[in-house]
Length: 384
Image (cartoon, rainbow, N blue to C red; front, side, top):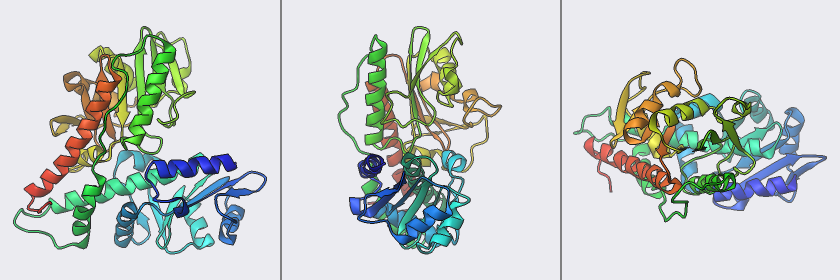
């Protein structure tokens, strides 16, 4: 358990969710409660007594991210409701409590997997593993970031270009934006799809790690797949893209395997994309500004489209249901081999190159980031 505590403390740092080790306390229950602290506070022991849990994380997010979360808490008395589809599905809403009081926190965590404590940070739980608490914390940070900048943009654009709304959060948003510019850099991903299963798994692994390190996916969101002959290699549902070895399914296209039970929930959409495009690989991330800009203008009715920076935006739910994205996304990828599912994330397909697909995913996020600025300027906001 101590190894798990150390592992996820390092991941919180690597993912940019906290600024320093001392900003986070992790607790995992085995025979006793393990932690990265010198001792387990009495309030935490009380929470383990009240709740049926195996892990708890109490973290103060990085400085700028905490400013965003604090601003949302100022506007919401008891509850923050995300707007992106993944957060609505996974965490639903985020309770807000005033102080680190075990009874208040237990009340919040009895109905949700995490909550925000106004005076100290985010508290999340795991019923089985430390990983669960880490995933919830990452998901809450993602949900708050997207909601904050999305709400700012939609609020500003309700005003005429001649009027600059006087609101402290608008000023703060402009100040924070530059610090969240999407990272760039050279990638060393394969220029061609490897010929062997081992090579394909390795290529998917390093692609996933790069997507995480470049902040193109958070929590356990996103997926990757690759087609080789009559077999589809696809990341498992709930897998983390920076830990793919052992979590990639080989799905025979003849239906002779039950791997589709553990494969990504978007398997059917992937299969339809391959059928229509003739491509051999798909990467799907949740780049923040791509998600934010996909929601600009309000809810997108099922079956309709809009575009962001020339990239089609479609609607659709996860899975193969009547309103599933498998009915809207594949056709959009036929045209430009890239599309954003509104409130959800970006999909790229490519005929042969993980490197090319990743660069296009990164380029779309940069384009959406710049489009955010352009939209502010068009609505009379002076942007540095």
